Image (cartoon, rainbow, N blue to C red; front, side):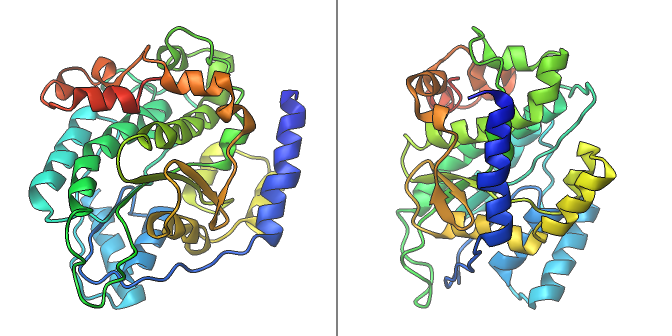
Amino acid sequence: MGQALTTAHYLVFNLLRDQLFGKLTVTKADLTGRTYLVTGANSGLGLAVSVHLAQTQEKGEAAKREIIAQTGFSGDIQIWDLDMEAFSSVVQFAERAKTSLDRLDGAIMNAGVISKEWDLTTDGWERTLQVNSPSTGLLGVLLLPILQATSRLAVPNPNASPQVLPHLTFVGSGAQFRARFTARNSPNILQTLNTDTPIIKKDRYETSKLYSLFLARAVSRLPKRKDDVHPGLVVTGIGRAFNFGSFVTAVWNLLGWTPAEGALNLLYGVLSPTPPGAYVRVCQVSEPPAWVKTTTGEEIQKRRGTSLSKFGGRFLQRWTALSTFRVAMSF
């Protein structure tokens, strides 16, 4: 199927159908005594899902005040600094979680960016690529041991829902269905994606979100539940980075869900008993792009041309579970 036809098929049979006829549900559970971590929680979907779960530091404190204002939540809300554009910050954040948290019942990898300009991080990676792919994968894998340890703990409160298991949830996007992924046959896929060429630049965000699905499927081979969630077409600040024309922007605003509505997909992903590596959209397990499950797709997910040990550099040398990183990011 050609790229134009694939995109048209996605728009008609996925995006428009979901936005016009999709039924979002509120996943309910007693979370008393449980701990949840949400990255990118100062605005948009991250803030919205934090509100559901509760019913810069300055931005974080503002988000905290809004969560309390909306829900009257009297529990412990902590705001931690995290710079997804620096591997060192990701490692430090994970280390803080390891030493500070008694339990971790769910982690939602929501932080994401889109940059249309060639913008490098201090680690030498294109900004959109690093934040949405390797940094997200690194943090998710580093949090796995805490999630696994939590799964062995008793239910935290007599009233807490016993069926809620620890989840690692990657926030994906329907944009992955439009990914051309021209780098798929490259010897080193991430290195190819990290180049300032027109064809790569045009497709970088879509491919970075496809990688979030790869992450969920690769990490799902490890213990406990992991899934990839598409929140739907949601009107948030990140949409401004697409620089759409006035007509497309008007359609986006007309059809798009509010962050609170889109966050229901994330809530479903982190609280429901989904199969490992599941792709979730409209509050139900759905099929990923067809080619992901083909021999070629599976081979790409298994390739070890680039691992976190390679681009994480000296920051990953401290971690003993290096083989785990390679499993999670062996593309």
